[in-house]
Length: 102
Image (tube, rainbow, N blue to C red; front, top):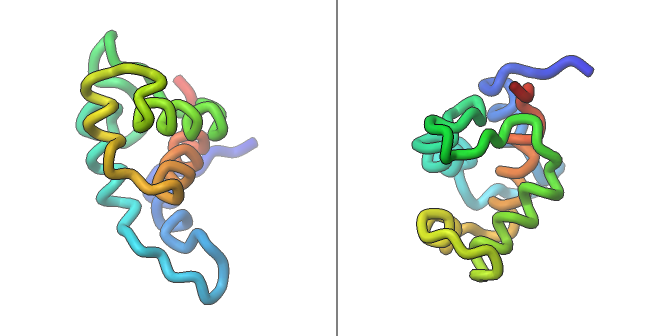
């Protein structure tokens, strides 16, 4: 399966929701927050930061839910995920899952 460049993915995800659906957030801004540590291509900036690129979207979504709820304790991720909506978590998971794994 051919992988799309992240810029193309971001543009395509901006249209998530189907005809007539209105996105209530800017996915590029949400990804930019994650990219501070996980990089815009989903590759962690440090050995302590996991790569997200190519991970299964359901796995990523579930982990975000667990960070937000406290089920998976992690100080930084609990802070970063505290404001994410369910839609943002799903779109982030989809975005990073479609990036090429390294």
